[in-house]
Length: 251
Length: 309
Image (tube, rainbow over all chains, first blue to last red; front, side, top):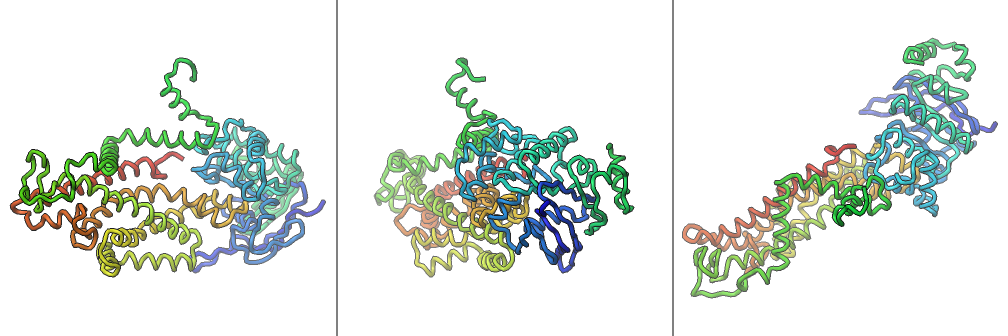
């Protein structure tokens, strides 16, 4: 298995009004090709910041990020865009409120000079289970689950190999959550995608991921494989706390 | 829904409110139609719109509507009071018909308003979005520049500019446009700061979009409603500034029937022949009121914070 994403000693430091806040401290993990890797932790533990750092949306202050073995510089170019895409947590905030779905989905194509907008946009809608008749709707005419499907379709427009999923279901109703997770699962099977998924919900990660890292206060405290999780074989007390919390929540 | 039972108008309405539009044009028109439906429910805003439409029609058909030549002098019929047959709003000190002068003056007013409305907000929008989007030293330089313009009272700055450029209607428009843009830059920057860190901007950046594409295609549409509202509400101020410049002899020059100039020339007779100054004053008042009512109505329907997400 070749490594798609290698994170090596990653530090992310935000500077807020003279204070330095170290959101990620020396994170280190590797995601193989076609693998689904989970980052778990409570809010503020730095897991989403790692995704944002990969996309160039958070200030990297130390360590390296390698995609397919090549280290990333400070800027993300179009080649990066066609290799790595991200699905954001809140589908109410990640779609432009004044653009139709058609524009949202065809704009990545326009940026990369890819033709056949009509065919590709309709195909993209259908691949995430939305009817082609939705094409000229605005986001406010869709439900939360439908919006997240659009966000997934947009991330797939450039046919990337890696999808970064930032709590893709936490803003959705429980019943819709399962549908979106199944869609993500199917898309990975079909296209051989590599997933790096962030969640605070162990049940979601257990459903989706083969391996996972547990984060607390910016540090990775433990890495687990799925059998370890199922058998309850954790070494770190924080992992146990998370596990018990997710059991209590309904799983 | 659709069928032989619908009138053509009903079919148009069904087409506009179709939940599944079949083209971008239909989607956009449908949204515009919904906005219009909300706008038309506000009676005061409709009055404002009516006043502005009346102004536009008056300017378009001024030669047909005006009973007399606005420049034709007749000293035997000078300073006639209102309701004189043939001169319903009276005549001024040269015997010119005031109604005709007001009707023709609407062309000047509208020209000023239109030219200011297409220049100042565009410039302000550009400065504000660029400033807010890039931040850092770009923001610092552009905003300090804006502050310098904002530090002077608008009329004083316009006066200084006209005094330097020379009196005249073109220079008055230029001066007003040059002094009107800073508030738009401020509004656009504030709006840009709220959307800059939104996920949909991050998403398009992640797709590899250039800064120009993001600013024009993604940031500007979010700033536009606030700026349009601001422009409409400012138009009353623009008319007053233009009239003020005319009044001080720095804007339109005699014998042009500019409203501010008309007030200025009527000032000498204010106590005995009140109508000479009052009639153009009323015209300014009504048009300013119209723009304000329209702006208030637009704010209610266009403000992104008041519409559902």
